[in-house]
Image (cartoon, rainbow, N blue to C red; front, side):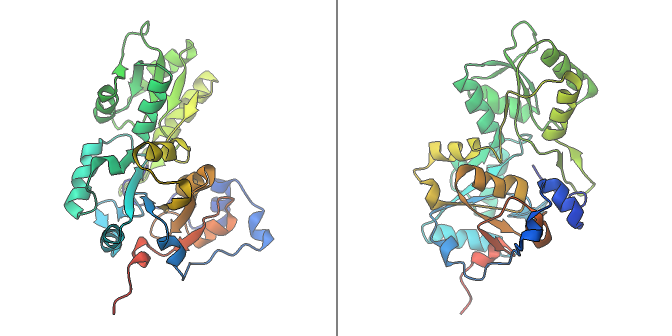
Length: 300
């Protein structure tokens, strides 16, 4: 998940890009990503799945032209949908901000990694969970019948979310529960959350800590780029995957989500990843735009 927009470590370094994508060979194969000039194939889609930070806004700043572009899409009959890995906030917080901007008509348009967590737990009848997460995350879980449980004897699963209230005591409790045999799941794999002050330790880093401490793998890693996020969209809307397009600034979450689920993707260059990153990445977007604003109708 992302909240401000600081560069990912090594973002301006091609070697760093290759390290992140896990692929050093593609550049030698002559792949030269370019910004798309003909947006008509993108505009033929019916459902537009937007990331937030680095795509719609950067921290507290709205990316120029994006609001108008999304409003034009909706006015032309397209369906905006918003996907976020941020499990620290509630849907109501996002809805309030989007509604103020004139970008959201219904809270169901906001699909969160927390939704994938609650679906997974309910599908697997794991209703008593130790939730390492913020009060907002625990409240969203409770709304779907998942109870935060402190009593080890009653806990059926451990959930690791992006917990801004995390402490060494919480991490130790999670490690001991997992060591004792409790299965655990991870809300999303993001290792850190960029902010204006620097990186914030995020869900993926907690996961690495618990995995290193216990030697045990998570039962599931949800959120983007897991297809669970697209499955949540499909529960709410009637669109086929061929009618959707994912738009985001991260190759390893947004573009990878499209690749994992058979959905076309757009890498926007207003956030973390660059054309240089794309040249070295195994996660190739269908299209590349400088900004979501490029989807606006040209001014007469």
